[in-house]
Image (tube, rainbow, N blue to C red; front, top):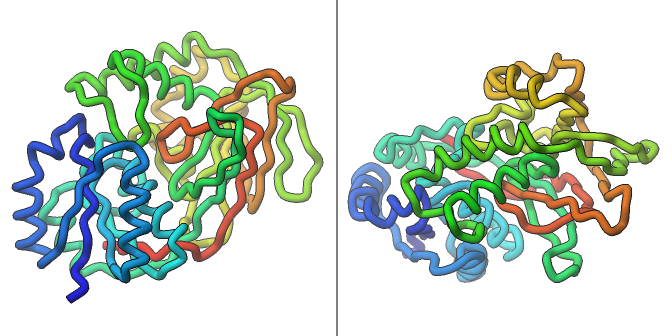
Length: 316
């Protein structure tokens, strides 16, 4: 019998998933049904486990963890070339992709939603970038990819927790949410705009000064910030949201608009739909970091390309 596989990141939610797993498993079994389980042991492990499971013929693979874990599982399924379906059991601090899907945070309610849900085929964004070894690498973003202030926030939050940021593994301290909020304010006060050269689809390459540049397949990032309020995961496009050369005061005083998705009317913000974006630094020696689904994975130059109908996802 081909039971659904749950890939659990025990370090997610600041380590609370490890402690809560017996109760999570009980609720899942009661409201969803039988399943098998495997636990991740290191960064990137969920990607490997998902690819192996899909290749073995698992039809439903459930990611239990935060956005990084969900993204890793999605990447493993896509890279396997199989028709496995991704489902999500909320277990992370941010849970931004879950918000776009409309999945509840309560485990029992989420389990029932998975049991009674429908399958939808969504788009993903293929991102090719330079990794830390200076080599070209390709990953798939299911949520939001960005560069600018977001990468500095992630690095600063990880530093505040006293450890190196490890993709897929949130800092395991109670203060991580507070650290992230503090890092956002500190970065906003100290950051300077990033100068980049950007080409959107077949348009002319343009020089831009940006505080933040987002390629959004889904709507939320940064812990519930509704950065792309009009994004649809299955329309064959991604949303490009650019926050231009705005002052720290302007960004901080308008932060509620960013969280509620009311920022697109700001004079410093531009929005368009696209299928491809190519971005590079204006100076070859400048390092501009890139994050995918909440994890800093590399740097520009990078190419972002929409891949329509690439992943089967269980929706509530």
